[in-house]
Length: 412
Image (cartoon, rainbow, N blue to C red; front, side, top):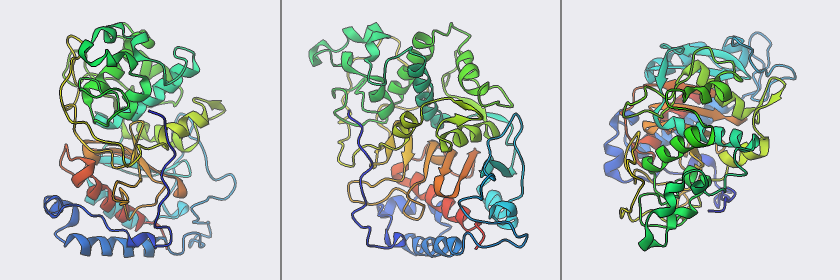
């Protein structure tokens, strides 16, 4: 599948808060926890108005005389050393009482970083936990590192070059799996275990993601059994100066391969992305390649899989769910979610800034989110939302509400 640039919004002459989140009524009703019992459209009108009010006046002087602009003064945006540089929310244009209320409402554990400073924490942000599907964009980062180190020539290399067993699969379908590339796996268009040819249809497919993780770690990076965490240590934990080891979990467990990391360390990954792959005086990945990874979502008209099973490798496993779990909504980009437009020209997160992007596990129960226009990074785990909610349903409602409430903490 050839990457495309994000589609332009055909409604640019409309105010952002006029976009309606058009979900089926039964989907909205199933998420009363997300809307606090408000009527869905009433809640969205409230959220839009609140967000507009909260952003009005960003950039005024704070009571301490420090600028509260989303673009910080020269020299005030930093990259942390081994320890985070800490600051107060007020020094970076947010309000502590409102942030405390927001994180208490959200629950779980997490942290907030602005201009490179750690400004807010809650729960147990240094505890190491699985981040579930929020792991997937980190596989993309590891792929870019493999390309830079010439372990692969590009994301468009055939995976069969490293995983020769794919060559013998699905003779009746023209040995289609020989054409699966790394990009197909990241884009969820590989057709692995399904009848579609690579690039033909979208399928949120955890069998395919497990294939990606296992092949990348074991056959590209050549990590021996029991030594898989070496890949995370060499390419994430050491360069970004993690405070706790990151792991793929417990070998032999059903979910082995999903990344386990603390929220204070995961926030460093978000900051790396917002800094174009630059950390201290090093370029860990090429800026253009990282931007392509994050900002080339699926075209809205990309069809979904028909869900018909096809042959997989012997012993194929999934560390998560099945082969067809969600829609791309015109917003899925190499395992990142961006704020794109679906087939009906509806934005994924209608009340959030258009430049927001994130990595989401269990529909946002675990998340890494960047708001580039505000130079703001959030990482959280095990928050209030029910697990396994798709982004095409309650997941996007929950994320929309969470960001509305967060942006109300920006000082007006």
